[in-house]
Length: 80
Image (cartoon, rainbow, N blue to C red; front, side):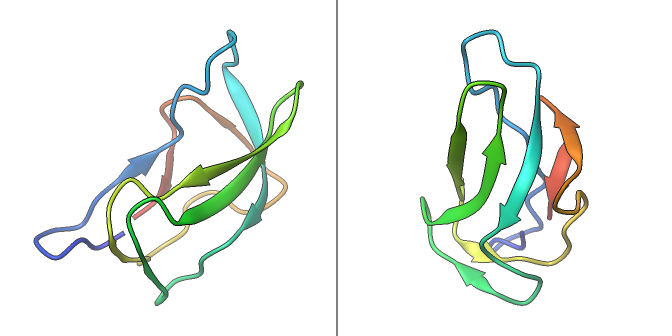
């Protein structure tokens, strides 16, 4: 995501409960979309639940690095 000052590399956060990876279920924003702070950005599925992940900053989605249906590990770059 491109915040007002610089690109922001957003990585898969630690969602707790010992989860180390999650499947990207659905992107709720696409490249070129403006997102607000805490706006739902994507849905992930762990072995326990489907969880919405909010945008950590306001900005514009530049590039999605992990497509839907793909497993990502905590710390993997998801979107800029």
